Length: 181
Image 1: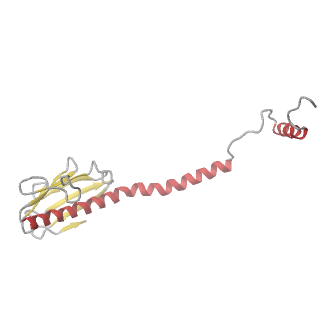
Image 2 (image 1 turned 90 degrees about the vertical axis):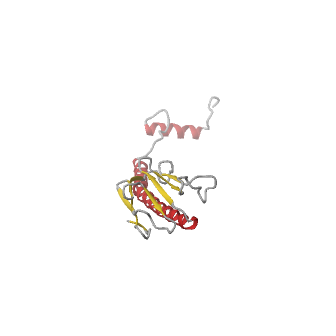
């Protein structure tokens, strides 16, 4: 047959397939119901594992922030003892940050981040950006000052909140003992 481009067996096979599907354009491509159900089940499993992780991010952040504040309070206390002069931790609840200052009110240099001052800003730290300082109360000030013996001049508390979770850091008067509740 001079005008055929397909071998006769191939032409018969294509002709039979088009007749059985009832479509002259060829076989249709798409997803079966089973394939769609498998995708929905996989997406459901992923969502069920991701949602608890997202909701626990606030609890992880608030624990990290509380531990960081407690460690920084201890650091300010040890600086006061080792330098023989008052050191303070100044909290700013409106800006959600705190800083460690020396007796003259100058922010101390960070011991690890060379060239940086010791200011911790929760809003600008991606790992702590859900945490808010809701209250810092040391008598009437938002500052806790440690004397050269490591005793706070006034004891008090710092309250943190993240995603409905509230944590309190307490500095005991006289001893300077720091606890997290």
